[in-house]
Length: 97
Picture 1 (cartoon, one colour):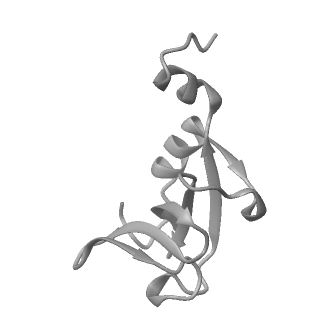
Picture 2: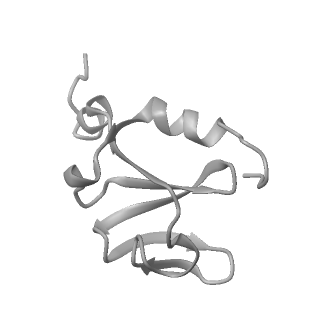
Picture 3: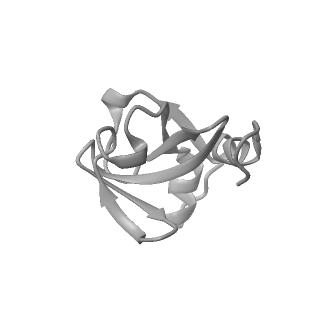
């Protein structure tokens, strides 16, 4: 995603597939989005919050990090999300209607 201007493309896709939740409700497999500059464009999969978050850094590839104290993630605004139920049902082979 481009930096330096507000781009809602990535956030809108996330909002169509995920429900926003509070930090207190986080479980392994949930998503955390970080705001970089003016856009919600850096996502990570929660393994155990806040100690290990799987995300990709251009120079390091996929890595784990502390979700709120490490490197460029420190002090960044963040939002939390969980896959909508219908996606879970579809992945289990159930009818989501």
